[in-house]
Length: 294
Image 1 (cartoon, rainbow, N blue to C red):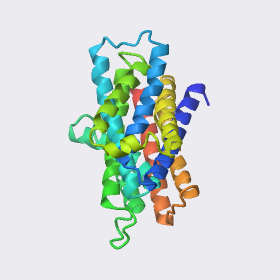
Image 2 (image 1 turned 180 degrees about the vertical axis):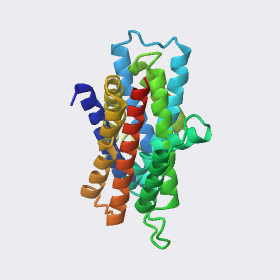
Image 3 (image 1 turned 45 degrees about the vertical axis):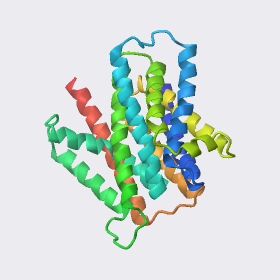
Image 4 (image 1 turned 45 degrees about the horizontal axis):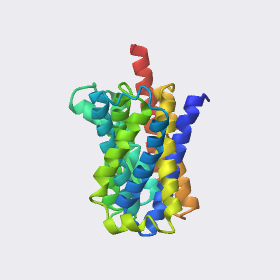
């Protein structure tokens, strides 16, 4: 494995751990908005220091850097918030897996806007992911109730937000440095989440005994992980990045089972595997198709 691919792997691993850490904080009674705010704000301190130490060629005078970075910040804010909301109302394993349905949403939007022609293979992939979601969320079990509608909806919105911030980061990279892009994005996140978050919890978090968990969440889940991701993605093929990124839901699921003693049924585990394998195959196929057309 190349160094670039290893960076993407570390980013996905840290994102998976951050889901587990966030789950611990939420189970301790912390509001998902507060958890998301500190994850992004501590990440802002981290990348802001990087920008201060390496200010050269930052592109901060380019309006397009600001436009795409702000868009990425909105996506990151939505992703963090909806992801932790899904954990709060469901489980870490379900939230992490639903977030990786993002490529399917991209295809459906592309089909609707006629940006990309639908093929039998793509429709089969959409059908398989849909089947995986049904099994994972147990929507067929009316009396089950193990996964709420809020958990499913928030998980899918996290996927849409994930698509938005990845697109924004990729476009912003054309106009400025990674540290400048991430500094703007995390600053936007802090502004967006500071107002709706519980003000009393925002202040209490500064002196709580859970503060080490908040620091770990911010450093691993926003600071180091995003730095590794944007640096590693530069020299990593999209197909490889897509496969390597699957470490996140696997790590999150293992954390939830080992540390939080969450349990998945056999059908839920099969549904999770179906989603991850299909999304991976879809991403690899898409990447190979683009390379062949070039």
